[in-house]
Image (cartoon, rainbow, N blue to C red; front, side, top):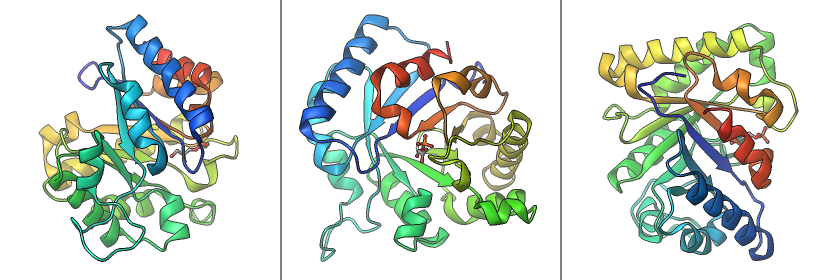
Amino acid sequence: MSVQRRPLIAGNWKMNGLRETAIPLVGELATKMNTAAPTSFDMLVCPPATMIDAVVDVAYETDLAVGGQDCHMAESGAHTGDISAQMLKDLGCSYVIVGHSERRTDHGEMDDVVRAKAEAAQAAGLIAVVCVGETEAERDKGITIDVVAAQIAGSVPPDSNAGNVVVAYEPVWAIGTGRTPTSDEIQDVHAMMRGKILELLGADEAASIHLLYGGSVKPSNAVELMGLADVDGALVGGASLSHDDFWAIAEACS
Ligand code: 13P
């Protein structure tokens, strides 16, 4: 973690959360944020689209940020079932996740689509959380660095800066499995990512853009993972559905 980059702890609720559970969950986090203010970290929750409006209402007047889990690349139009970045902004979101491996796998989204979505997010005034990460087969072949470098080159828009992009490294095989790379492996990938950003966007962006780690982050491993030099926070799935666990992960950044 660096002094220059204030840690960001982001919760990706995925397709979880009905009013009965989602509102108390965000209510607890909002109370904790208010009680702990000023915190030494930023906190973001990304509920399913159906819950964004209600979650924004609860998070109102707290430092808790709200984001979407995906957006369409177009501003509006004939795209049944899709949601535009402008719509997320209109609801009160400040971030949107794009290119999550579950979108890449379930919906066949390739780097060019992810980049177009990130550009749409930036154009709407949102911060795009661009996800990258290798599959287990790619890791076994020893091509993690090449895969992640290519995803960054293909998915991160050329006009990105610390104010409109965050990059999240999520090894696909570590998501929801309880397995993580070693700390050295995570740091090596993050250092390479920062180098790649330097090459693509320049030194100022490389020094200031947040790089999150995601994949089986829990209270028990958060202190070690959040202490790595080029890890500026976490993108948390399962553990973000428990306010106690999510808060404990955030406190690991203090
Ligand atoms: P888990 O924390 O459940 O492994 O999920 C990580 C993730 O996919 C966050 O986007």
